[in-house]
Length: 223
Image 1: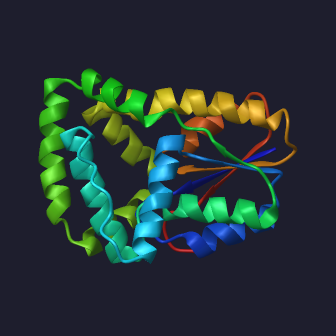
Image 2: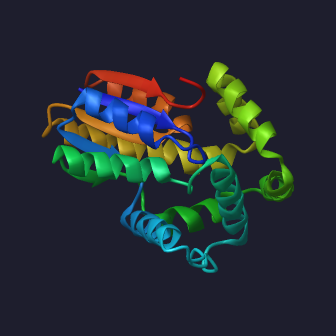
């Protein structure tokens, strides 16, 4: 059995996610991270606890740096650091004494593949949307998350139409690889929980359901 939990990376979901994990009592926990991103997240948590500025992301492509800054701002205004839900899953796995698995593709491979795949139109649209995202009030983002939680498929479909190559690289290809890793885990562990960004949930459910029992839970929006 696999429980797929969809989260928003800018929301403070630690308590809700921890409750979900402990209620499910998994044999293994999987999160949408690779080793590099997991280590970076641990370091950002440490820097936050020590009241130090986060490490620079100067090595990342410019557009990814901009979106990272957007996530930083929104997460801080909503109460935490981006990816705090992944740290919550990690802590819960430690508390329950179950293994943690990092099931995402390495960011070092995904980032260049994404940048090489984007069309000129997608690059321009991403640049424009990045600028707007930097100045969008938090209340507008919260309203958008609420609307998204009420009609997920329409939002994802709109993104696919506007950014087809981005959707292919960031969602479809990673879904396929994460599903393969989760399926392998389900062959070894009786109950696996996967914590992923909410946009991955539908695709993962479709890929996994043909071979194993799957339950989904969305933590985007109010309880």
